[in-house]
Length: 584
Image: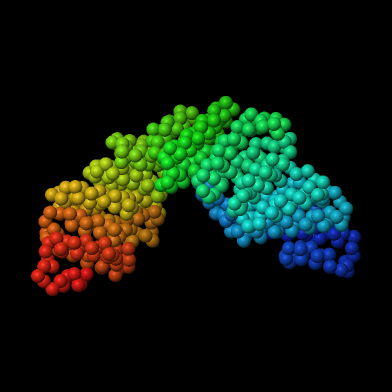
């Protein structure tokens, strides 16, 4: 449920609980009894209870709260916390979770749950009724609420509740320990990982199970900071999994790794591979080691699901995490092998989705600079996507555009601009055909791959490189660039007209970088004089579009530099008043 709805449900449950507690406390009093006790319960959490109906009053006379009544309300508050600002945003967004609760809302919910626990303790002490006494589950619920709250002191609050629990001679259960580990995983403290390891070593061996081990693995998977520290944590994850399988002497019996165990390990190594690839100081060999470690855990997960006959035991997130690691490591052949493994081992493995195909395409496209057939392989997998992913299953959002752009970029990198432009024109034709159909059928969206500014800019940049290499052909490339920019302006104009009636339109918006690329192509021509007038027209067009509201088209220093260079090459400024230069 959305956070607001969860919070409202928790409030309603809490009101009902307080009505039950008030009715039970006032049992045996006469009608003229003092209302101090009622006010005592009303004031606990700052709630003013509405006057119950006659039927509700009669019901309350027959019903008394028990421990499960309090636990249910505390659970409602705990579940209203959807993971707040203290959580790892990368892992949360990758799993597609709902909108997180704000840190203030998470703290509010945890405080409400803890206040109900205190109320439960007070009532049970006054009534001397063991049916109302808090249990390990009661403390565990509140601990979990604090652990997920995002409060900066959440860990200390959880540990204090654990200490209170033990002082009451109540043995902690697995959820209590898991709550502590969760608070460590969401903590920003530098030594949170070391504290989690030390805390885990104090847990009795007879209570340790896969859930607790997974909680510790989750702490190490969410380590932030230096890549070297994260590498150590990923190695620690492998060590924990090895201990689970073989037993480390502390466990009463062997703890079997499950899907969460391997899935978290795959995610941790994959994120490390991606961040390592983004760091120019990190050697490629380390990134490739991370990718192979992710693959190793994927293989173990597949073996486990096959051995235990678990249909759909591997999620598409596990597959995509592994593919993402191989993309970062520039290992397209290995990415293909994982993809094929997923296809061959259905139903234990998932059906690849749009993201899966996009990662395969990008893995090949990223190698286009040093592999001759990388662009052709990227195109092959694009066609596989078109063939194997049903039309109704495609989202036609940015991920589809990204998939096509990766192939276009690959061909541009290999200077196969004609092939890249052919793909771009295919995108445009399909988009415009579906746009007309959507308008005629009054559909709210266009179900077709949508070109964007990047799609055009890739081809324009390739034309510029070719013009630099072949100045004699610069005129031809300039003409092709002009046609693309004209098409961009046309599509942008249509998108603005249809923006109110249709969603997911092509985001094709000309900007100064696009026009500057065209000016640069003009400047590479052997006969620069022939393109001076066109260059001035482009300059005026940029100023006009800027005045019309498209500020991204405003001429910049690069624009003026291109024009001045062209004037200098064509000797326009020699012997004159330098009027054009002064105007610029």
